[in-house]
Image (cartoon, rainbow, N blue to C red; front, side):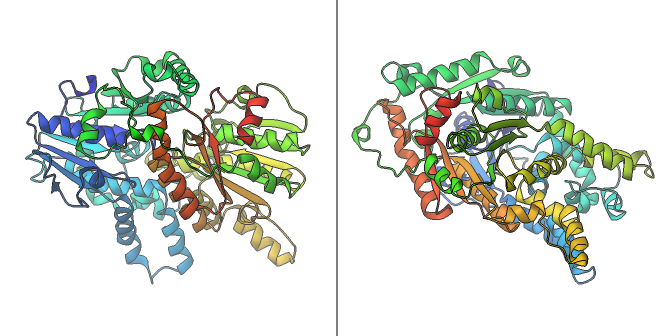
Length: 584
């Protein structure tokens, strides 16, 4: 593997959930330790299973791995780190400031940015010269900070004063309010990240066009702030031999090879490694020892066992949706799980039944026109341009808030407005204009704001609270977009996931986030399931058996209502194939 050639001291693995970061990081740690190097493996993944992989409890203390000489591990719990961080900031003002102000501060500190910055706060000490790490040749990080977080930490000036003066907006600057005293330590850590002699970033992806486009954006964002020592690892590629005697495997192989041949230009210049798909769960030393090899899968007795799974169809969910005659249907989920395809399948199935439907998306990587590949009576399609909407929102904030700021204050405000929350707020405002249509027809939305962003909108006194105040005074009936999202009779939220451990964990976190905003997801959709398909491939059959654990978890723990969409032999493009996806 090229990414292991002359490895520097720090190795960072980054990528979306479910692409195999943890497994590759663990396999790398084992390989380096076996070569006689002293290695520290650090995970900041909220779904970390590093301890499970090695069969011991690790937790937030450096722990030697008895089964692997020279290897120690540390699991930073990002949620616990974020809670400690919130307590440190909110504690001194609790009981002093009004309760509603304290709640606003707590909500500002409840999002993903706080979690990431708190985790970075925890492992900063590992990136600088200190007695904690002096004994290790290599420190491997499972999950790297995003470019946005690093850029925030590079900013000059006083975050606290900027925020106290009310010049910030609903964003990610809030979590930085308590970090003034650690600027020198953060600068040293960020310098270490940008030093190609000390640090290598490994971008982990799958052989899927949408995933590779996302990785290309990550690459350009990180390179743009000086983190240029990057390698690309494409994980989980189906071996050609599996495609020789099975239609489903052959179709997967063709799709993956097409994605690899059309890899984004931004990634073509990076050193690249490819890791073949494995049939087994990547738990235990034996399994991890085979991950970075191309040992073929050998059939065993499990290949004759039946894959017994309940697989309610997407069409059965549409039956319940269609009974209402109109309403808002929102598809939510992490990148790479197939939200756009599932949204299109729901929309065309509703339209086929003679119901009026408006299908809309804000996903920059979504190509609804290409997915539909044709027209259908009763169906209209639109796309919200997130860049244009964000620019409009950003310009409005700068015009209203930046006039009295000095150069440093304006720089902080502009960075404040580059946060992921800003785009979600801007896009939600555009969505709000479309939501009104749901009183007369179906509006199916692909890509929606997270619960954190919705609560920020509410907590900062934006649209919802202002309308409520004015309407209450006039004794008028009113419904705001936030209220409509909270009303299950008007809005049905479908969470899309894959039948894999990390995507299901991330979907569960998203559900909890929405519930905190008073929004109860209506159903889950398990997309692209091998267990719900038919295959003669020994490797795919074993993976189908592995999926049963996650499908059972969704059915028993996460949602009373769900659908399972089989992995399709052909790319689900065009109205007829989308209808086939809905009916299973």
